[in-house]
Image 1 (cartoon, one colour):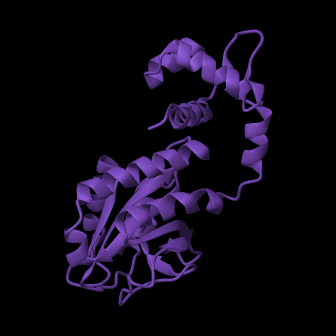
Image 2 (cartoon, rainbow, N blue to C red):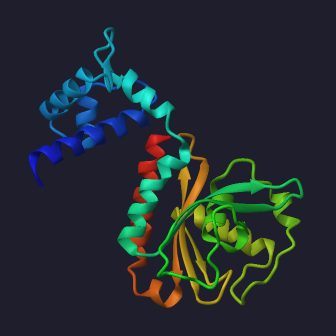
Length: 250
């Protein structure tokens, strides 16, 4: 990897780090947290400051985001942020990648709505929902993530669910659903193991804001036989990394 590309990576890493911080941060702390030499942090910050991507606070000498970065961020639609990350995952695994948000209807039912999809014509599934499609949360990986990490999820509402058994693997009772939600919170990801359709497997993670609450969820899905040929642990790892990178931009 050329030194120029490495320098760009360092600059982006520092920008994403500053975006996650509630207060300005000093060079020593940035160096410690990111494992980058102080001299490298200093030179990178000088370059970013010259283009107003960061600014040094006069009173403390610490650094925060600058007016150019903030101005650019204000012009970006949230869905536009998701798109390149979803495209990158699709390119890596050649499977469908969906981003969904929570729909809490007035009828007291939690569903997920697909707001972005990356797929190819070669990967046709018997169930291939389009953007705007709505699905029950209890039988999808993104839905479970949204239930596990969204604020104000009502256990009373969950107890009033009218479960539909789509397959023999579908969760159809509240205790099992609550146990699954707890498991998802603990491990940070969810799996749809042929719960909506036999032959379809899906792995999802939440996309969290700075409060640790889900603003969306992202998944990789495909035919079970093909998904079993993938390293599922790697998919989970890449989904979590992608989610963290998106969260840093929100």
